[in-house]
Length: 312
Image 1 (cartoon, rainbow, N blue to C red):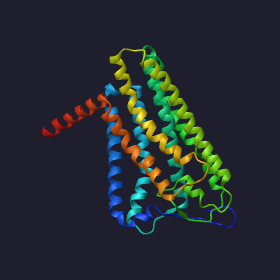
Image 2 (tube, helix red, strand yellow):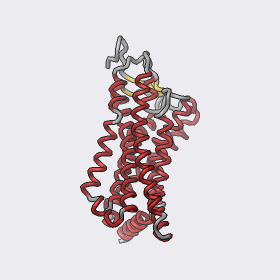
Image 3 (cartoon, one colour):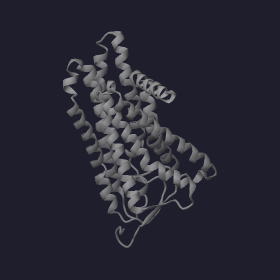
Image 4 (spheres, rainbow, N blue to C red):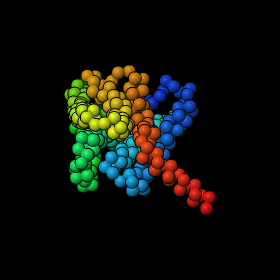
């Protein structure tokens, strides 16, 4: 594909964890285990919610959407990362790299919007419990989820289009997968405008959703302190899982995408990337299942049913 002047890039080389080559097998096993745990954990949560009518509520509908995002999010990058551990030639076609980058950014933005939607759902459930079923109808839940997906896939378009117009002089991506900041580093022209646009779009998505989540929880906490102690504990428990996920996810992506320069050290960027792209999707189902009695009960019921079927 032609990219400005006389530079033609057909493929990139992923540098990956080049400084840890002696630990290649260990890293492969570690990432494979994390990927499998992520796939199994999120799939179990998704199937549990879809097969248990008692979990047919707005909160769990959004949790099932989160599971789909996390499965997709990791599946965009992890198979290629795992393959690269086993081969010397760590190349990726130009078009595939750009698609990987766009989908990765889109799903990341979608998760931001979905976490805001989930915060609104908790606000409606705790602050307006008597009107909750009329406020959070099935149609409204579908529209809110669809809106999160749509906004998520629109957000990275400006950065992606501007990147495609840059003349690229390098082919070695100093990262473990195709992401916006490391690809920008390959440009042989001034990238300050691209960095500004990328950081601004990221800031809009992150700050807007942080504000919406924060506003919801200010109202939630205010409402919680007005109810009796028994109900207060239950209300806090339903929100704590969501808050942990929000803190983990927003903290890492804020560091990665809202900053005045395109990159810090390769090691720092890679470490942060692993945190939000690998560990967070793995931890989400663990956080939601271990801190949620309804999901635990449903999982136990399904497990008992499977054991009875096996014995018979």
